[in-house]
Amino acid sequence: MKNKKRNKTAMAKIEIIINGQSGEYCIGSLTKEQYEFWNKTEDFYIHEYVEEGYDYAEIDSIPSNADFLDGSDWYDFNDLDHLILLGGYIIEIDIIVDDKKMFSGEFKKFCDEFSPKINNINIDNNIIDAEYYCEIIDIQRGKIFHGIIETENFDMKNIEFEILDEEIKTIFYNGEEINNDFGETRSKGISVELFKK
Image 1 (cartoon, rainbow, N blue to C red):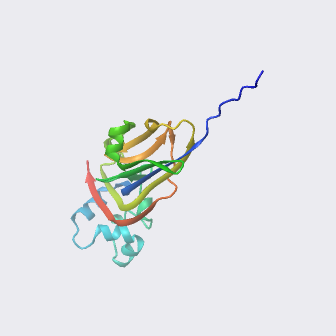
Image 2 (image 1 turned 120 degrees about the horizontal axis):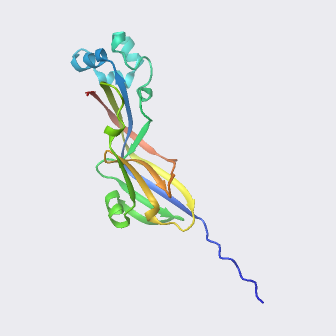
């Protein structure tokens, strides 16, 4: 009687690469005085203040009650979880399985072809509990995501995307978050907006 050999499913190496536009997103609360100062002043520039931080506040003598960064870097000014948004108007995605490119094209085309699970989140559901707040986005372009996983029986439809205000926030496979290991981006400038509820 011959011994039956067990069929072993080989692990495949999966790479997910996204090129396009990204944004490092921060949102933080302001006092009424801070909001009114930056909303009305013509003598100071909020973009320069956010980009240069302490140096700008020190040299240009920003009033202490308007200095909402308070000596910190802009990316520490955050009342929500720190977000990296992966996407702009055109997002290119590559799926590589064991060094063979299985898909390459626009994100919308990928979704049309494979119908991955998409969880849409509206920023209004995550907004901070403050009457006045500031939104800061560091806009970047380049390779904004390169995650690698190993799995058996790989299926494109098991890739999941969490979308925040039409931009990719997080990528999962079978419910497990995929880490972004190899981003290569260049900054295209910082967007700063003030809001009042």
